[in-house]
Every structure is written in C-alpha cells, then in structure tokens.
Image 1: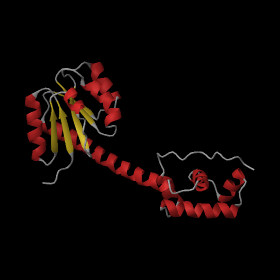
Image 2: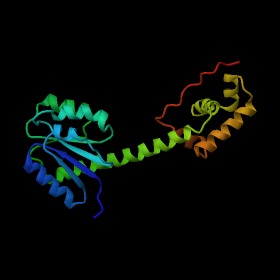
Image 3: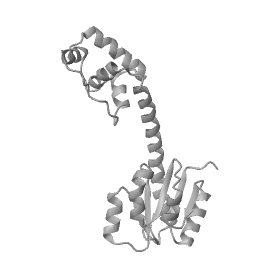
Image 4: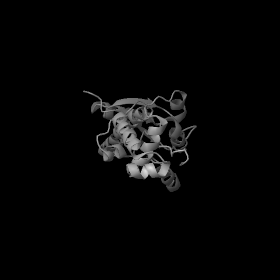
Length: 210
C-alpha cells in the first residue's frame, strides 16, 4: 500500500507507541517512534508530508518545549498532542502555539485516525504551498530590478499610466516591462499573477521619481 505520509510518534509510553505504530502502518502511513523529545532532537529528521504526535509529559524536554523548537526545525509540520494528565494552561499554550488538536488518554482509535488524517491533509497542502512559493521565487529572480519595480505596482492594481506618473517613465516603456513581467512569471492574466504572489514579499521601488 502506498503510504499517505509520515507520522512521527514521540511518547514515553511504550504501549502507546506500539499501538499507534500498528494502527497507523496498517492503513498505510510510515511511522517513526521516539521515547522522548530529547531522543528526537538528537537527529530531528522530519520527512514531508508528516504529522507529529507528541506527548505532553515526558522526561527531559516537555511536549510544549519541543513544540516551541519545532517552529525552527519544522515550522509547517502539524502537531497533534496526546496526554493522560495535562493542566488546562498547558493545553491552552499548546493550542496557542498552533497544535492541530489535543487528545486526552485514553483516546479511541477512530478519534486519533480522524485527527491524523486532518493534520496530514494540512501537511500535504503545506508541501504544495512551499513548492509553489519556491517556483514563484525562482521566477521572481529572473526579473530585472526595473521589472521588479513594475511588478510591485502591477499587483497593487496600478495601470501603465499610473506607474509612469509615479516613477516618471514613459507609458509605452511601462507596457513593455509589464509584458516581460507576465512572460517571465508565466502568468496569463493579472489576477493569476496576483494570486501567484500572495504571501510573497515584492520589495517597494527604491528609485526616486524624476
């Protein structure tokens, strides 16, 4: 069976690790098991797409502590917390830091599967978004500084004449730069270009108007 993704289980309870591994592998997930956060941190490999199932209370680094470090190590990887004994403030902190869900032990197999599937869908989408942003960033690098300036104004809805008025260029020249931007970015329409650049930073022009 082709795996649906990778699930990393970090829990100091061996019986929980075994049961989750059996359940998840049966439906096609690849599974990595760690007995504590510190063991994981010795070699924090996180494949994509992946979901981390994380115990709250463990010897050494706590679940909350690892979650904080994951912001640097694996920012886009969804985290699902499990715990048999957690204080309300711990649960609140975990959710504030972006946990997908928090399951209290003992949890049912179905509840765990439902949460992991939801989290894995998020991970798949994050991989797609990262790949898209990488490709768009590579295309942006093909633009000349002048084309980057024109692109900055284009995605903000400025017409050729408005851009020419702002920077003192000729409208016909702006039209040429605009066409080159569309060609290099692989966009057929302005709305497509705008959608492509959502979430990416297009630096504001530094040149002075003449």
